Image (cartoon, rainbow, N blue to C red):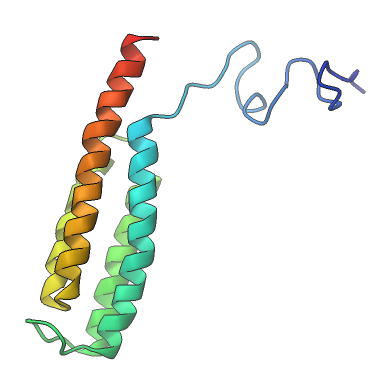
Length: 146
């Protein structure tokens, strides 16, 4: 049994928070990259939108410039959703950001199936671009000032 810490929460003295349990004793965990955080936010919202767009394309398979069957529309939307989930899981690696750019291109191309996706894809591509530029700039600034 450990003595209550100064905060009175009953935690051991060397484990003052939820992140302290995963870090080795005497070290704090490395701060998470702002670029990675912004990328995960954009991709998370894209996942929801692509899933809903796949359902729309399933119900309206002939709405766009290219006509595919309803099952193909649902499967292609599922593949893009799976690619987004994989990209989210790999964001700790630099190549995942290239996958993120590929996702942006695929969502823009989804405008061929549903013209509204050109607009949605352009908005998400702009958000992704902003996240990559600003997140990288903030991370460089934080690294220089550390």
